[in-house]
Length: 238
Image (cartoon, rainbow, N blue to C red; front, side, top):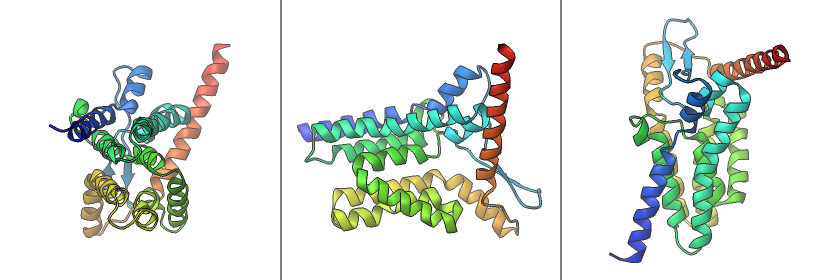
């Protein structure tokens, strides 16, 4: 067994185990022992059907504990892909080991072995991966994603991930490791959203419609309410 194969094997295994750490569940269990994080539910415009997200991540924590803990979870999920990728990139700058590790972090985040293969949505982990692979690319792709999101809000995160494909094709080459990484990351991200996508398409086919801005508006409302509750609690303890 060659050294290169051993490093690839270790990078993949370590990446998956790191990705399987659910900071959302850990933080929620610490702050609310015995309780489950609230699920994201999108109700049809007529109120008859509901799409329930299987994912447990920063958004769920923000809904249940407020903006501070939601952003903390988001940061930890970003760092759990960024830090190991950056370290491996520094250790082996000429080899694509860090790219493989990042992909397995995302796989672990989406389908964690510790939680019955039911993980988060992958948004923050994907951001950490892009930042580690190309800091400039991170800036370009996320600005592009936000611009697309201004017209199609539901595609904001997906666009930010998918834009890595043309970015690496232009900067590294069509057949580069980085382009392969971008394609694989986008496919994995899409697979992670598949349960909700299938629900959405099934209900759309049945004639139901949904407000694509619902979740964003709900997050803002819940975050403000949790902040007010926390402020009231602090004043009451004085």
